[in-house]
Structures are given as structure tokens and as C-alpha cells.
Amino acid sequence: MKSLVSIIIPVFNGEKYIKESIESILSQTYKNLEIIVVNDCSTDSTSNILKGYLEKIQIITNTKNLGDPASRNRGISLAKGEFYAAMDADDISTPDRIEKQVEFLNKNPDVVLVGGQAEFIDENSKYIKTSNSPRKSQEINTVIFRTNPIIHSTAMARLDLIKKVNCYDESFTPCAADYDLWMKLIKYGKITNLENVVLKYRIHSKQATGNKYKDMLQKSLKIQKLYKKLYNHSDSITDKLYTLAYRTLLKLPQKHSYNLLSIYKFLSDIKK
Image (cartoon, rainbow, N blue to C red; front, side):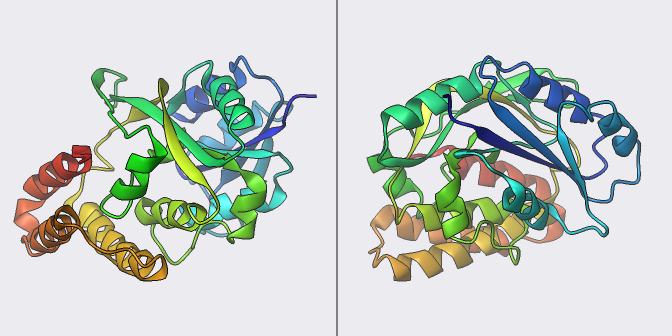
């Protein structure tokens, strides 16, 4: 029997894109899926849209706004699959995403987490660029102490391990909770990315704020410091340069937020 995959989609006021996101999962070539959508107290028409999928998905409605990491954890606590697939309410999975990732994990039992490449799109689904995330686990083991090497909505991991490491740390904001989770998982096995594009990752105005990326940098530095100590990681010259660059960016005033965002994205694209 094929492995059950639990796909968790947290959503807050996602009326514009949630239908397309759900449809991309329902259209997967791999069919043994458990789709759990966690509605985080949306105040727009998200709830009505979700009602149209009652027979196809499991809907969990929070009684108060919990935020992204806590909503994901609530979905994970109810999940029954062998694998957990992350998904955002504004992204689009390619039709064969789940099939490719399940096949890879079944063939590679030493891999605990697999991501993939993504096509970045804008608010109107217009193509921007394709990611170049590191593929080999050896490279990821180096890069992970500088920047997050896995695009969150491309991630699939072994659910028992996700639960073993206590899922997402809810003290972190959405832009850092996944990074912390990956750091916890590398203790138990390899992390890798497929060379295939498995997702269309949406960039829109609500994401591109200087405050958000400053928070991401602050939390990233905190995570890096914690796990460098835990894993006895010695900084290379490149590691030290990244830390210096992040701290310098944090000193930029808010009026330079656009430059902050641009430089952060540039650093995130550097893999060596």
C-alpha cells in the first residue's frame, strides 16, 4: 500500500489564492493524501471557500488567531501519514510534486527531509525566476549554518521525526520556524533538495516589508548561534562573513528597507 502523505495548509485571510493552492494538491498524480487545512480565524471569505471542499479535505478552525507555526502544529498533531508535506495557502504545487518526493524518500531511507526547486511568481502568477537551492546533503550541511537551504512549501519530511523533535517552535515567527525545524532534523539524517521544480512560490506585496526581513535576520542569527553550539560547528571564513553581513543589514534604518530586502535575497542565493 502506498504511503499516506499528510499535507498541512494553514490559512489566514487567504481568499485570493487558497482555492488555487488546494486545487494544486487535489490534482496531484499521487492520490493517497490527507489534506488538512487550518483556518486561523480568517475574517474574509476564506471560510466560505473552504466549505466547498468539505468532502475532499479536513478543515480545522482555530477559535483564536494562533499564527502560522502554531496552526501548522495543530494540523500535525492530527496528521496520520507517514510523510508530512508543507504547503502555503498562496503557493501552487506542481502535479507530480508529491509523487516525486515520496519516491525519493522511499528510495533513500537515510534522508529525513527533501525539498525541491521553485518557480517564483508574482501576485498575478507571472514568472519571475527559478530557485537554485543546493541539492546534495553535504552542501546543505554547510550552507544551513549560513542561510535556510529549503524553501518551506517544497518540504516533505518523515512525520514521526517531525513529532519527535516537537514540530515547529512557536516562539519563532513563520519566517524562522521552518529554519529551526530543519536544524533539529539534521541530527537524525540527511537533508536534500530535488533538482526538479516542485512548486510555484508566490511573491506579493504583503511579504516584501523591511520589518519582516529584519525579523528574519534576527531570528536566523539566533538559530545559527544555538545550533552551531549544539553541533560543535566551527565557523569558516564564509560563515563569519555571512554573520557580519547580517548584523550590518540589521543596522540599516527602515527607510532602506527595500535595499535590505534586495541584499538579503542576494545573500540567500549564494550557496558557497
